[in-house]
Image (cartoon, rainbow, N blue to C red; front, side, top):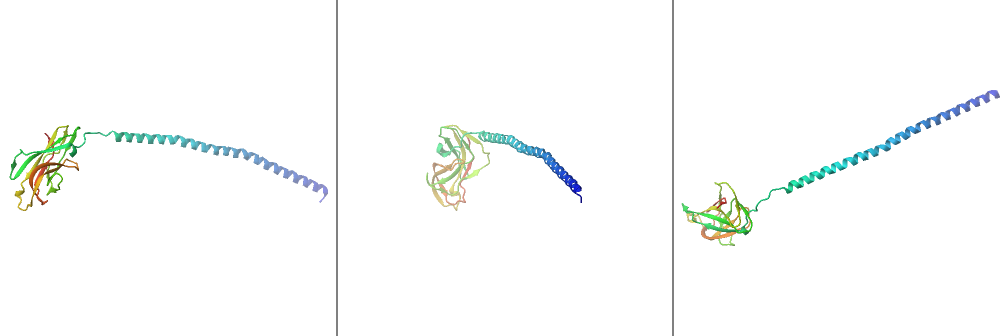
Length: 220
């Protein structure tokens, strides 16, 4: 190959290499703005998510607070009335003028409100014969007579309610083991404390023998 041809080939090769470098640099320069644009879009997204989260959270909290307040209001807006009569604020007595029939005696069991506040007497008293004020019950407790409906009996201080108490003579039962009783132990309705009313009677020790029957309280 001639020296002139070698020189021309080197010039062409250098020009081709320079053009390739220029084209490569041009390509890198065009791709850079696209990368910056994508970076700007990515940077904007977390900001938008944080804004959406921040705006949602107060709404949820406010809703929860309102629900809690409504529940509390409903709970405290309950109706209240007089308390049930308790043995500690009652005095008991018997009115035996009701007569009797077929070996039974009918009495009025009377409970008087001796407290300073009105109280509610509702339902049946628990009644049993007992050996004394602190003695244990003897035999079976009184059976409920539910022939009349239960009514609310509001007792103002000094006022009384009554229930019919029937006592069947122990002598009517041949299998009765006679035991002297000093009177009646009376539990007011829904009370666990009791009061004692002195009234000597004959009782039967057998729990199968039902000597007593009591009705619900009514007003006097």
